[in-house]
Image (cartoon, rainbow over all chains, first blue to last red; front, side):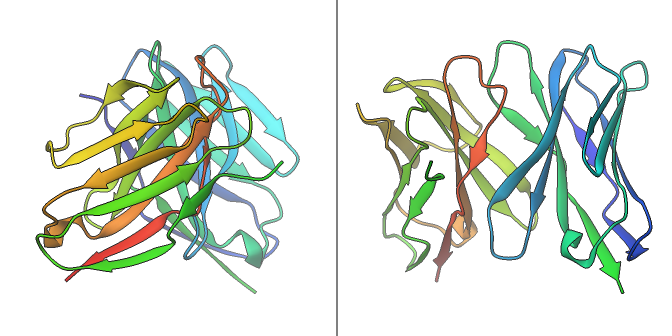
Length: 111
Length: 113
């Protein structure tokens, strides 16, 4: 079945760039998503990319997609302490609404 | 526009009881999906409803059920609760049939004692 893998933890200093990586196995994935979850909260949709794109930029966020290697990354420029949270990568296959999530990457931003 | 609302936010039950959780999607959204989040298994899909019909179902036992009303509000029910059902239950709302964006509510934290 589908599988989405992420590294579990990333620590950066305030002002640095953060890069969170994700790999997926389902070759029929059509959309790939990044969600943010703060403690005690639900999931906040940050951005998503269609599988025929290789890059999407949205303010401080840049998503890169390597479809051949099934690798997705989220770059956060000028990381702030308020960016500390768990980031989830998710994929959606063609014809379905179901999201398959990775286990999440905890991002810790230190001053 | 108001976001996705879920009630109650917190719930404590004992084994063997049943529970009903409620989700109100964003106004105008017709699709509601439910996910279970646990530390061990992460986020797992439960089911999805569109226009009062269950469109897709995840790999959960029959104790987990749901429904959607004509106003798009959805409920999920868990019968004969087990300790392992303790989790954060998240509801996601989408505009319609092609759900490129799914917006999540704050979740209901269920604790089974």
